[in-house]
Amino acid sequence: MLAPLSLPAEDPLVTLTQPKHTLWVLELHNGADNRLTPTLIKGVMTALNEVEKQWRSQVKAAVKAQAQERNEKKFKQEAGGALIIVGKKSQDKFFSNGLDFAKSSKDPNFFPVHFDPMLARILTFPIPTIAAINGHCYAGGFMLSLVCDYRIMTDGSSRNAWLCMNEVHFGAPWPHSFTAILAGKFGDHRLHRKIALEGHRFTAPEALADGILDHIVNGKTADILAKAEEVADSVSGNAALGVWGLIKENIYRSTLDRIRADWRLTKPDQDDAAFFAKL
Image (cartoon, rainbow, N blue to C red; front, side):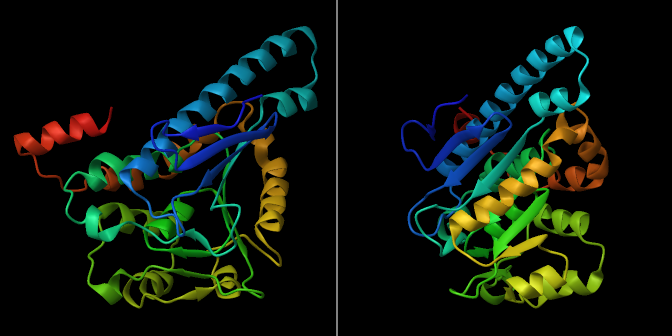
């Protein structure tokens, strides 16, 4: 079992835990509203690598055990896995309020080097991913939730909680990654219009009715996590044979191609900065 891991080590903004054998929980805790910065993304990417490494080690152990004892149910229990991503557990107000726009808009490497690779990594992650949306979920935070396989959100009955892509309201064009993910996840052009061009502020019940969410929960962060764990338990065994991520690679092939088409300046100083940003 993995001990709690705070990342990145020099400035922890995420914490990874493994509450049980086949479940990992990644908590985002960057200030009050979890802005998605390069430092936070670095922590997320390191955590994803750690989860995959742990899971693959467990699969190998389960395969070895299966060779001695043919028990399909036990194998799936031992070789399965799921990841929950949740906003700061000590509050019930924000999952993520999106990017630090003032800084990200000035960095030509932000999308191609930082944000887009994280979106693609989660979109094709080899075990089920569940966004436990414990508060407002805006812009880049909304996109982070969309690349997860399942979305569970507070119902907003005790405290307002909205999902919104609000770039149209403050004049920010969408990168290729955002349009690709929207098209890859939803086939209804009316929903595309509502999300992207109207910047509709969805309540949880509206988002559930429109198919954006899979479940809504009356309660606080602990209750949302409990429902997310229930979903994780129901699907984690589907990852045991190693094809969950491979199938997603095929489902989202065109989405991934468009994500990787994000325009990037290639001046030498920017290329140099991009290299060091990956370290």
